Image (cartoon, rainbow, N blue to C red; front, side):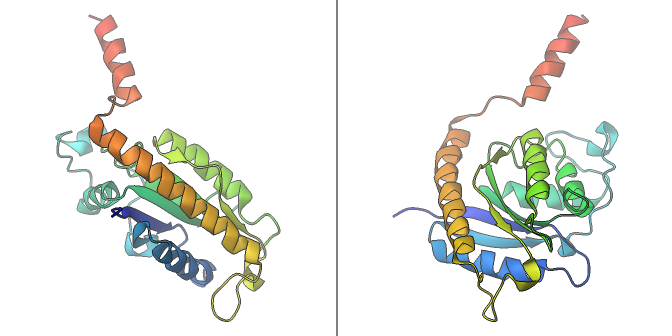
Amino acid sequence: MTVPHRLQVIVGSTRPGRAADQVFPWVVRRASEHGRFEVELIDLRDWPLPMFQETMESVGDFADPTYSEPIVREWNRKLAEAEAYLFVTTEYNHSVPGVLKNAIDNVFVSYAMRNKPAAFVGYSASLTGGARAVEHLAHTAIEAEMVPLRNSVLIAEVGKAMDAEGNPVNSLTDTALSITLDDLAWWAGVLSPARQAGQLPPGTQRFFAAAFAGKN
């Protein structure tokens, strides 16, 4: 029997009246029905993280970081529990909401998201369907050492994209999510045992170690 992968669905908008509330229930339901995931909803409304303020001094012991505030420590530990991530994001000014970027920035020195697959559901009131936000988020995911996937879901004109039952009006939107979930499950199945078998130290650590050694 295949053990389900721990998937966190991360909702990246927090403002009142957000369209995310029309989208993420469908995403969570479909991910739960997929059969390969143990799904947890991570709503950033429940995580009032400080604006990124971590320094080497705030981290404390690298083996057990304290961070600047307890919620940052809890946030790092929470994200470390997942084996895969599915971000649900709107598009603000051609990019992701600041609260989502800040949430990823606060994953600091724990490498909690490292070598784990990440996929994206973008939405917007315009015809772009959040494509530019998804593109920027994929770049951020690379820097956080996630493994961002090519296939994603883009929901244009989100205000009329879902029916009364909370399903996409366009059946191809559901198809796109099915493909994305299949990809996430495959990559989680590849990367989870790879991490367990042993990982290289983060490249930044290796680089700075070499740079420091060169000064001595």
